[in-house]
Image (tube, rainbow, N blue to C red; front, side, top):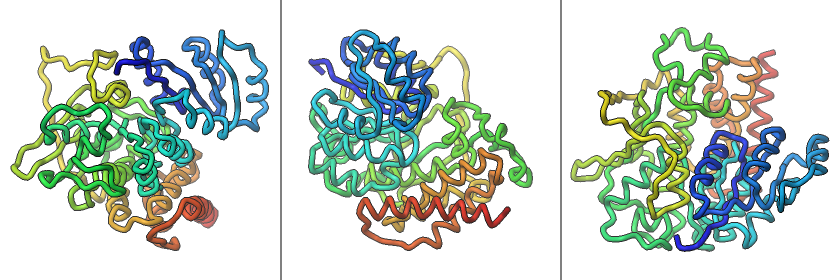
Length: 415
């Protein structure tokens, strides 16, 4: 990269957003922070504005009284303030942004992800729901605009890096992530290299991986949020406990790398050092290893195809450490199979599963249902939805609304 690239961080107050700010702070000569957004954490957001001085700061919750008060605040130096999701869409669509770090949690991040690729930006994608819900639409838009989609999820970043080993020669910096990984010219459905036998997603197993099966239904909110290796938001931490996060990552991998469900495997890896692997048809397995630190995949998405020094943790080769993995127990993690089912069926299934899970996790965090109810609810809603094989965006959003309503109706029936 020979010029300063302008970066927008969508969701700067979340765990990914905070890590992204640290990465940008260590690469100030390469990147300019032009826009940050948040939804409600205004106290932290104001501190970020003062410390990092973006050109534009946007609070998307424009109806909140606290947002109106924030808009009247004094600006650090040259910063402008704005409110509303449309202000965010307008900002990332224009020439003042080159790279969009999509760190908004849930389906709320879909509209901005689509806007980024429609306008030809590099999308550093941490919002897996964009691909889970509308993978075909997102990739079709990226194909048309020649946008890049580079995964920030540590697992998919690891797979992308491992796939480079099958591509001889130097990567052109203007080559898309999909072209670099597969040699294809950005088709709507990416065909992986024929030499790829399978990809292996690693999973920590979450905070309850060693619990007796019969005790899982009694897990408390505090139990589910006590992740052993990663520091993440509440929703994704609960997803890790149920392994719904891995179900969504299976769907995400299908769209990113063009592999069918039969070529995707998940294993438990408690140490969270191997972030994922690619097995080739000759028997070689290429893995990406590093300490659990999201600053590494964030930086890779920003600087690709270059590698630079940065703030991420390093491996300590002076100490002994064992790495282990073992198969997933389907009785402990019934949510995982839902990801493979959605990958096989496609259509509206991703939107329904994602919405049902978001609603069910919210109920769990409110103390209304048990942790083990989440997968049961999601399966029931998925089985009873009005399936469409090739939905447009409006149909996907309608199915999203329907699934959330069904979860609430399911919950009321328990009361």
